[in-house]
View 1 (cartoon, rainbow, N blue to C red):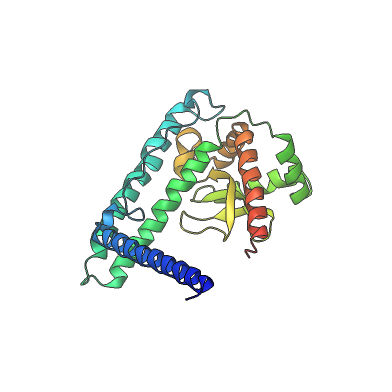
View 2 (view 1 turned 135 degrees about the vertical axis):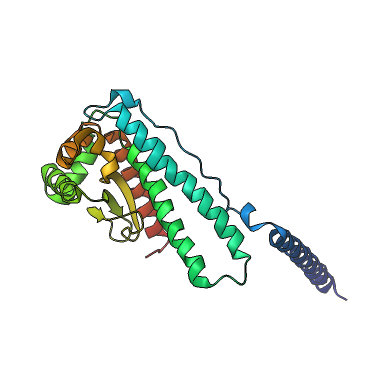
Length: 253
């Protein structure tokens, strides 16, 4: 055997050995995963936690501390607890081969709704607690997208007024597919525009204003605008634009 052939043989043997070790590790890891309880896996773990309010609820302008605390504890907190309970049941039922798929999917619908509620509430509270004065860069981007900042605000508020007395969300979103800022109407927690990152979220369910304003939803909308934390929305938009650039570089679309 020549020196070159001997080197090739040793190299091939080393590759084969590493491949065999990788196969053994993969087999061991797959056995470990398959032996785990479904409820211990990340997708089914009931591990969601209630996040603290990122602002002092006694210092909001035009929205009472009593309302905010009730909203946070009962509506948002209730959704967190419900989401954990749903995920626990999903883990149990996944291993029940006798359970009809349509019954399982009833729980998956509840999973979708509770997930949406938790996420939207956290974003809603996250973009409150400010002084209501727009951050200049974001103000310009909204003006570029809508023709003027006033035009964006007019549409956002009009959508809120239209949801008064019912339920839903008004969301300023950045669409990763189109690269556009748009205002979106959401009737519930389940349905949202595809490939869109929420930049600003306004809760229009009655529990978000009824205690302070009764049926006068538009007064709540005005109060919401006085408490927007624009620095947070600006950071969200900055991250969204960077995400769009990363996805474009990777050829995603």
